[in-house]
Image: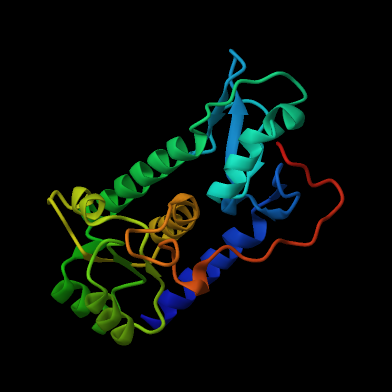
Length: 234
């Protein structure tokens, strides 16, 4: 198991090392492209979110934070970066949040069907004790007591609190789920990245002082040093 974990860590490090960097059109910060949101301008001039990063066309990149997305819309930064007139939906941040939440729920459902995800406090606790968990998920509207117990049990694991209990439940075919765990691998790493982006776009949960997020250890890294030739688009 230790050899498998080491191989997985090396695989993840290799993916990070070869991932290209892009510049945020709003902040000017240079980041790994996997930590940014991509947009393209459609044939009709409308700015379209490219969550899967597969759409053709010149990519425009933004840091996944609601205030930055709102700033880009208000200050018409998409038009400036695209060097043409564009149409931007005023509720772009809300649309991004919806798209990311759907993608995360779909990925979690895929992990469940592949036998890589479990739900329920007891099953999650068992997965942690036996080293089968690489990521914990706690509902942002769930009770704080359960989160604290899991945090004490799995001190070295990242814990994401970006999904609601209803959204977690949808991934497992139930009405509500408060706790879930995902095993390691590429799907887990993709979930971490998407959860970070979703956390940056979600407003604080009712009664919370700070936006629900992924544990500090897995928040986006500090901006990379700017290098020659790095652009805000593909």
